[in-house]
Length: 181
Image 1 (tube, rainbow, N blue to C red):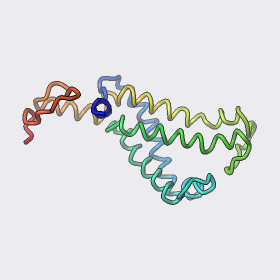
Image 2 (cartoon, rainbow, N blue to C red; image 1 turned 90 degrees about the vertical axis):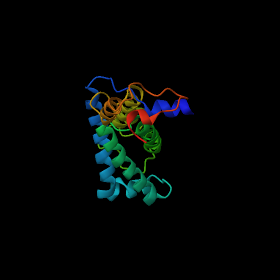
Image 3 (cartoon, helix red, strand yellow; image 1 turned 90 degrees about the horizontal axis):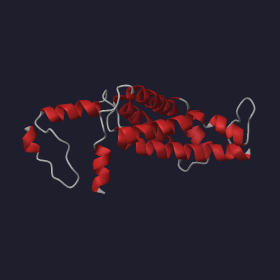
Image 4 (cartoon, rainbow, N blue to C red; image 1 turned 180 degrees about the horizontal axis):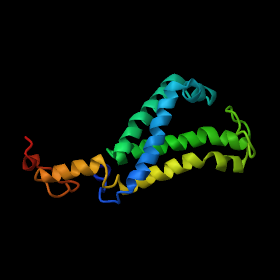
């Protein structure tokens, strides 16, 4: 468990600066979709009610806040690995709760306006943004937030304070070397 926690809390920050583009894409989409859940009832509580999701008021609010806060975390590159995990789970639930019924032709949501409206090809067409979000977030989970991130900036500041190497799993961190007591 310590190794997993260490891995989550110490993402690589030496990736290319262009990782910022992926964070802007995924973080931006999560951020504005979270806001939309509060601004338009049909995107939040109404949608969750139609889908039969339990406790739609609570669940829609929870997911909305998760997307807003998590989107901001991705945009800034802070705790990227930690937020990536619930986002992957959220996208899997979103796919399962909306696309299976689309495949079967029993979706409680409006069908796509043009063919294909049901079946395999309809699902592939409608899943495109979910698919892109999952793969982008998994990329960030594996590769970290990149050089232009708050994680990288904080790590640089931390190292300037006298700590020049990452803490190894199972070793204690001597914060007195960084001037903290």
